[in-house]
Length: 259
Image (cartoon, rainbow, N blue to C red; front, top):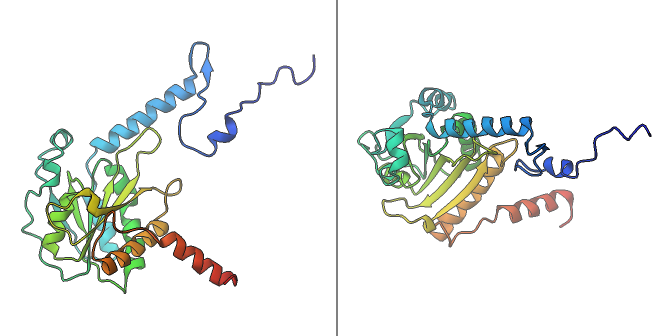
């Protein structure tokens, strides 16, 4: 018997597993999955449930925003009175409970940080993402202090944006967690926000969760390009296309002397 006869057979899925967080080629032990894969599934399922049900840490996120120089952030809620009601009644998550604390800002852009379906994502990434966004957008545009929104769906931002009197609104929101990623953020850009805006009138950048997802600076670069395009077009949504990749390629070519 050769020295290699007792070594495990090569697993053809190994290389592919290194390129994705998806569950592929799960190992088996007899007639069931391996103990490692079962335990990993249970842990990821628990993380996804926690992301949905855990409330946003407003104190910590607010502290991070103050350290960025925004002062004391405003906090609002939707008409959903609890997390359980928010999950059962998406319509209530789109309507504000009270926006009397929000005054017209006179800024070009408003930012809403909403818990959405993953407060974990907001707690982990929102402050760093806001930092990258403001760096990419200023001084070309003025940015109002961010508003923290609890039990919030994307459309709640339309009411907040109207109250702020901004030209464009950026909603940073926790995306629905999966069994691979529980801390992913999405960004929704709406030009001339007001109640009744359709989803087709927004632009979305998703899967923001470095190091495995889209990074903060890359997301901010895309948003800056969309904001400039929205102002020029006077609209957002399906009529507005992301041209940031092409612009980045031209800039790289110019730096390398290829143009």
